[in-house]
Image 1 (cartoon, one colour):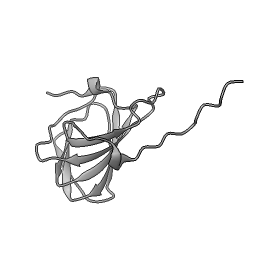
Image 2 (image 1 turned 90 degrees about the vertical axis):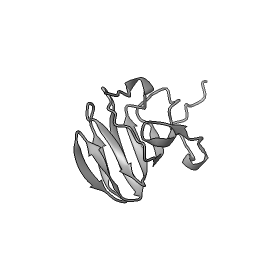
Image 3 (image 1 turned 90 degrees about the horizontal axis):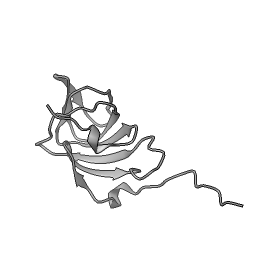
Length: 117
């Protein structure tokens, strides 16, 4: 008899090594999950965040700390702790301010889907 497949994954985000991304420094979890349903990133926004978009991926941003705004297709949307924003494919976006966010890419993050003008 085959052993049962584990039906959960656990990540300790503060122990994940950060990587540079267009928004700042991201600690990415669940990128190696074969199902690829979603990933979760803890992101510290840096002041040189670059506007970008995704062709296929949705993202949900949840602001944990700080105040600032998101640039979304040219609109400035103020954000503060517990603001949640869903960013749909094709929306040019970047975060501005001293922010720490959770980012949930759906489906899971694919670096080839990061597009710049």
